[in-house]
View 1 (cartoon, rainbow, N blue to C red):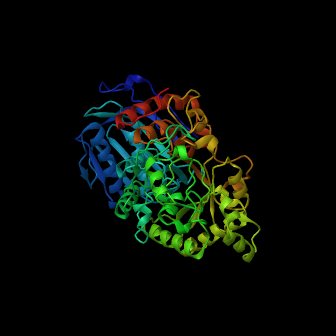
View 2: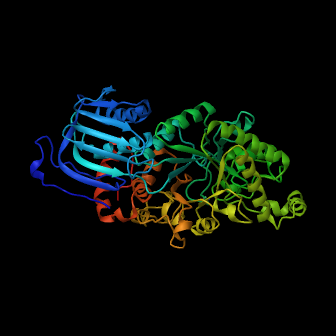
View 3: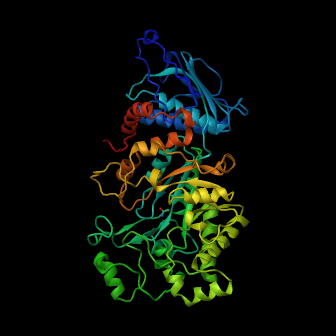
Length: 543
Ligand code: ACM
C-alpha cells in the first residue's frame, strides 16, 4: 500500500521550499514528514561495514560530479550524517529491500543486504534538488521499499555500432540510477564481433571492423564508405564487469548463434555452410573497399547492411569446438549465472541447401532444420550447464523443442514467454510492443529509427505478467528488459535520446508494486527526472 502524506508548507525551513518527493521508480511505501535534512560538505557519510563502500563511493562520485563536493566517510555514528547500514532480515522485506528515514538530524538507510542499501542510496539521489548548490535540502520521509521483479534489465547492442568503454560504463550507471540489476551486453552481430577471444584473434582483427554501412534506413541509399569498428579487450571486459558489480549489476554476455554470425564467418569462413560463397549484400549497398576486396578473391566480409542474413554457422564438430572455446573464454570473464546465446532470426536456407546439414538431420533422426536448430541449442546448453551456468535464448529456441533448463527471452510479443512459462521454464519478457527502445517515440519522428511506435505511456502501461498465466505459472516470469538495438544509433547521444525518458518508465514497471503505479503522478515525476538527465549531461527525447 502506498501512503503519500503531504504536510503543509508552513513547517518548512527558510532554507528550502517544500522539497519535492518525486522518486522514480515509485517505492512501495513513502510517508512524507515535516521538514527536511540539509546535506553539505559538513555532513558525514557513516559506513560501518566494508560491504557498503561501493554504495558510499557511488554517492560521493555522484555528489562530486553533479554538485561539486564530497562527504567525509567515517565508520562511527555522528550527528549530521547519512548512515549506510546493511543488515539481514529486516522484517517483511526481500533481500534487495531497504528502509530509508530522513529527518532534520540526518538520513539512515537500512538495507536488507548491501544491494538493498545501494538502492536506498539511489532513493537518496532521487530526493536531491535539481539545482547545483553546496547545501542540498532533501525532504523528511520514511520509505520502505523492495523490488517487484528479480530481473530488471536493459540490453545494449554494441554489434551494429561500437560504443566506448566510457559509454558502456555510463549506460551501466543509468541502469544503477534506476535500480536495475541486469545489463545484457549484445557483443556479437553480423556487423561486428566486439569481444577479444585469445584463441581466435581474427574474430577481432577481421570481425570487429566493417568497411562501410548503408546510408539511411534499410534497405538503404548506398554505402557511406566509412569504416566502423572497435572491440573490447579482455582487460576492458573485466573492468566493465567489476564496474557493474560495484553497482550490483550483473553483466550477461550474449554470443549469437547460429544466426547473426556474419562477422565471425568473415573471420573464419569455415564456420559457414558455404565458405566459398560470397557474403550476400546488394551491390549498390556495398562499400567500394569491400567490392575491391571481393574482386580480388575475398568471399566473406563483415556485413554492411542491416536485417537478417542467411549465412549462418554450420553445425560441424569443428564449429562446435569453436563455440565451446569461445564460451570458455567468455565464461571465464563473466561470473554471470546466465549466458545468452541468441538463437533468434537464424534463416534455414543454408541448412536446407547444405548436404552436410541434411545428412546430419537424417543421422540424428531430427524432424527438419528446426529440429537441427533445437539440437544445436541443446548441445550448447549441455556445455554451458556442465560449467554451472544457465542458458538464455531468444524465443526462437522454442522452435523444435526447448532445451531442458533454458530461460526464454520473449521478444516476438508475449506468446513465447507464455508458452515457456506453461512448460515451467523461466522467462524474461522483452516484447517489441512495449520495451523495444529502438522504436520511435512519436508518430512523426524526425530522427531515423527502425520505425514502430512506442510512446512513453505504452512503456509505462506494460504489465510483465501476461493474463494468460495462472499464479503458479506467473512465478516463472523473472521480470522484463528494455532492448536497445543500434542500427540507427551511431553515437551515445542517440542512445540517450532513445532510452530517456522511456527507461525511467520501464524502471517503475519492474520495481514498483502494480497497484502503486500511477500514470498521472508519473507524468509529474518525469519532469523532475528530465532535470536530472540534464544534470547528468544526458540527451533525452523532449516532446
Ligand atoms: C531480436 O529482436 N531479433 C531478438
